[in-house]
Image 1 (cartoon, rainbow, N blue to C red):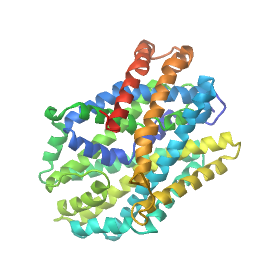
Image 2: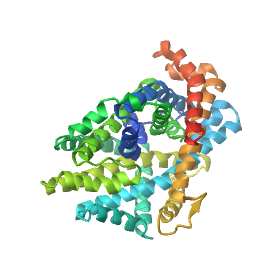
Image 3: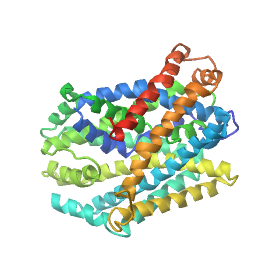
Image 4: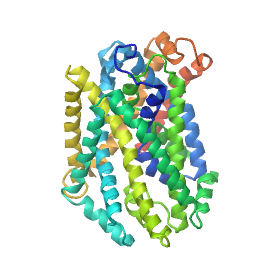
Length: 453
């Protein structure tokens, strides 16, 4: 039990792995590599690392402070710390954001399950045109994408409904090490390909000629969004932290894990792509069209190795997606469980049903029913736009303003320093960044995403 009487994570290690799992996801495996390719390779990585350390970690700690001090779901936590119902809306918005994200994220996660199955039975063995047609036919199918999306949410439900220790922590302790093992195996196989070191050189050799304000803002946006800031995820997980948990140290550990997974993903993708002379594309094309052909060509002389690589890769994607969907599901589960005064199982069921509806509609909008669109975007693309470019920046900005200007400084200091026992000397730096630097940067990212700057 933590200080609020709620069940807490059983171990510090489990808390770190579970919370890191919320940050590690598909974005690390495909979004980070293609952004790295577009924005100057290692130059982008260096800027990204600085943004995570200087801005992402303070933002993460801010959500931790709210969650652990309140010891409740996100909506109630924001209301308790600000002593006002208006701030509760930020928590409610975080819950809503997480539900939308889980809904459309499960669609892409479902694609991963389909491709894992297809890899196992050898359905991805054709040429590049065949693989592209396979993806198009699958996404336009009116049943299968929705089926896999719902299946992924149900798997997530099964984990979350078992609670914090027996469900989330136990599964995270298994998934995260497995994910790292798969990554290392795939990186090793990729880097041993002929010509692979050109990809490694591209990834690790900075090209500062490509650095611009756009590159900086891209890195800043990736830093904020890859750490799940603005979704109430970190706040919810922190509500299960014990009083002994060192918030600043935990945030640093999670940031390091997140950065390490992203860089390993780059070391897995770029060497293989460069070895066959293919430049990684962005979006779904990278992992569902380009890479199947990359594996086929790169291991043409060793078909069995190519088969194993393909299976392990889509298994990796599915595991990475699951660590994220678990955290997203828990946000709504905790909210319904505590605000509706119902059992955890009922709260999780409400979350599952709502997210399944969103997922089915998003899956159908990708091809089977083009009429499911808003403002010229498919429903899936609109949900992505709404959360990533509006709701998450607003949530992250409001959190920094709340911690920096409205929560009593005694509370912020006590939580940050674990009641004056650690990190005391850097507390002032943290407060300055949260008050002034983070809000300016988040606004800049928001304007950049909107195309204003």
